[in-house]
Amino acid sequence: MKKGILDILKGKFLVSGDAPKNWLFIIFVSFLAAVMIGSSHSADKKVHQIAALNEQVKELTNEFVDVRSDVQKLKLESKITEVLQVKELYPSETPPKKIKVKAKKIE
Image 1 (spheres, rainbow, N blue to C red):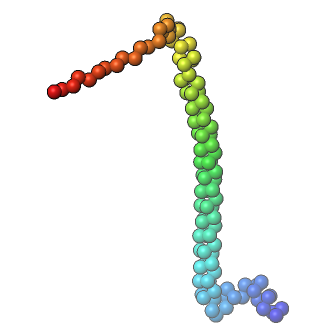
Image 2 (image 1 turned 180 degrees about the vertical axis):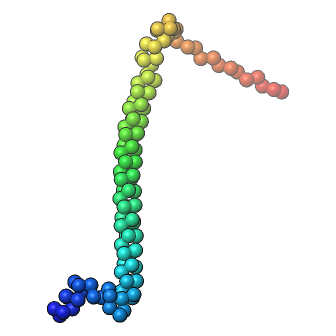
């Protein structure tokens, strides 16, 4: 057992008679390791993109809520009359009258 470990440490399996088979296996394992590392980096990049997009969605949601509340305040009658007073337009003193139209009967 001690001789087998020493042979591995010295690298005799790389120069022995069946070395081409060992080299092909080492190249194959190295290729698989490179593919795995690339895939891991790609997954990490996508995770960071998703986190950034989630942050952007939160910001846009907050902005939407703020703008919606501002619009609701601007639609109030008191705010509208306040803005129109600058243009010298005031609410009517007399309330509107309802107009009823009677249809004629066609004979």
